[in-house]
Length: 555
Figure 1 (tube, rainbow, N blue to C red):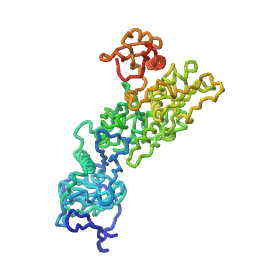
Figure 2 (cartoon, rainbow, N blue to C red; figure 1 turned 90 degrees about the horizontal axis):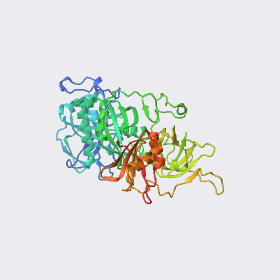
Figure 3 (cartoon, rainbow, N blue to C red; figure 1 turned 60 degrees about the vertical axis):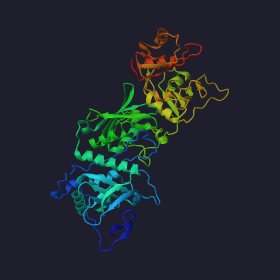
Figure 4 (cartoon, rainbow, N blue to C red; figure 1 turned 135 degrees about the vertical axis):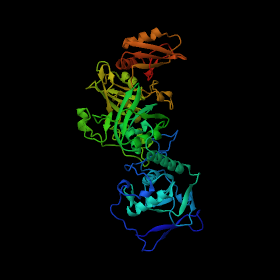
């Protein structure tokens, strides 16, 4: 094996050239290939504290307006943004202060890196030896430079790894002193600088130890605001697993908002995820993450299903005997894209456990309906809260079942997320993906008894206008309903009397600054669902028809 070193002809601004050393200069690779720093004896004079364990660091540069599920470059565990090729290579993106001497330096040169190495991986390798001031990753050349604040820390690192070859991502790497005294990065390459500084800051926080009570916690509480597209366990797992190991997860609805509890493997992973993801959008302009620490230290997960998951125990039951036979929970996680997260198009169709197999299908199977009350128009109104319904078919031989065809697959997933197991007309309906990809209209002359209806050209679609405000006001069924399009001559008593035909009216309030809108609270969610079905598009005058939707507000 040849030892490869670099020479810099004509000054430090030139691209380094690779030269092969004589055969005699070989480095034997001894076993074991990787010895954790905590298991080796470091020189006692260094005074450098060692870590209790080999803690992975993951960083993400905060991006105020980008979405997490886009294909924008995002540095996560095992990923890195694409680099330019050709003459504009990585070696020209840094100004290296050449050191005239070949002795010890604060800058350590690391070679033979794996292709998926990140700045965080390089910084992690240097954490046991001391604080670091800069890092440069030359991805095309599979090399990196790591600068310490103290030269003795660099000496300790090089000395240790001469006897105990280092590994990054299970690949042996070579550690030696650099010919350069310090690193000066080019300010024009802001993305590379930002990711490097983020890695250094994360390492500094870990090495300094948690200083706040919250930083010692491993469980995060997540609230998703502006829930336009459905967000499930798989989507959250894909996002949060970039920052460490996700152990358990529970999702639920509280105070009319989507929330989740996520238990990470250690406080470092939880802190990194919180700092990087708080305030970020899962999708463009919507599904905003609000993250805080939970007071719970350990999540008690009894079932592996679409509401809870223990990733450390895939053998838990689903809680539904039918699902236990059909769905092996726990181990199935959708594949990542090249940047570690799904593309925006792919992720929008991958929200529930079965979505990967049913991607592109906009047809839903709705079961356990009340045969005496269900009609195509009623299902059009209810499912129309979460997307534009094109067709509805109530099954002729099983009238408690129906097929609902939405305009888009992501609208179908949204309806599943909000309406599955919701009580409608006193019965908990089930909403799942259908094996059918299209609802067929009856042939001409074929008897149908009005069980199939096409709503494609209906004027009552809520989402036919791109960018409509309705897209930002999609909420799960609740006791409080939002009313709009109320004419000025209609009084409170008229509205409450009409709604009282469908359940108990507990409260009513006009909007103070806009009397065209109001909130009304029903006695239960079931009554609110029934009232929405009956009262949406209710004529209040010759030109005004009432608009009804679920609200997250309270009265």
